[in-house]
Length: 163
Image 1 (cartoon, rainbow, N blue to C red):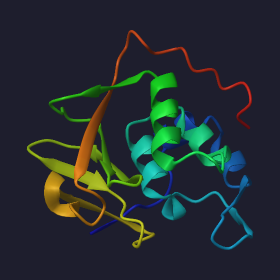
Image 2 (cartoon, one colour):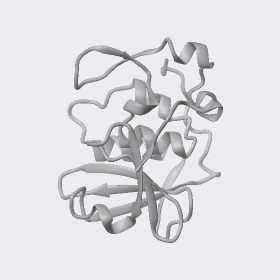
Image 3 (cartoon, helix red, strand yellow):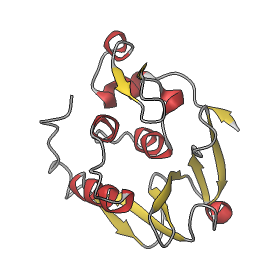
C-alpha cells in the first residue's frame, strides 16, 4: 500500500487552480454533509484514476454531482465519451480500467502494464494499491472494461459550467 500524498504541480495544472487557490476550495462530501477542503487523500477511486491519467474532466467529476436518476455506469460512460475516451479490447499503460457488476459501475483504476492496475479502493481513503487486474473480481464486479483517450475525439468537452 502506498500513501496518495499531496497534490503535485501537474495535479494543480489538471485541476486548473494554483496551489494557493486549491487549498481554499471547498467541496461538499456526501458522506458527512459537511464542507471539507479539497484533498487528494479523500478522493474516491473515480477521482483518483482520472487525476492519475491527467484528465481535465476530473474537475467535472469532482464538482458536478451525478443526476439522481442516473446510474454511476451511465454517468461515467457519458462523461468518458464526451472527454474523448472509447472502449478498447487490449489495454495499454495509462488506460482506465472500470469494474462493473450486474447492477452498476463499482470501481475504477489505471492500467500500468503486465496486467497490473493502480487504484484507490473505496474502503481505504488515504492509500492506493497496485494489483493484478482480476484481483478485485468479483468484489467490485466481474465485468472489466478498458477505456483509452482517442486524440481524434479530444477537445469536444467544454468546461463551461464547471467551477
